[in-house]
Length: 83
Image (cartoon, rainbow, N blue to C red):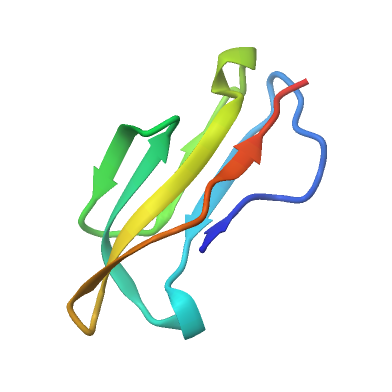
């Protein structure tokens, strides 16, 4: 599950996207994607911070995580709109 703050996002803001496994399973080896393009891959940590937000950060984001039970899980896309 990709968690994005439920508030208006403005240029210059700082926003943190969080990737979590279903039923709160711990994930490791997480990658974040925007419009199907991989932004970053983290072997430790489950958060991506965007700062300062700019209009080009708008798009459909998703994350992919490797769960402890040895299975990949991909989140549903979440739309991020920067005003």
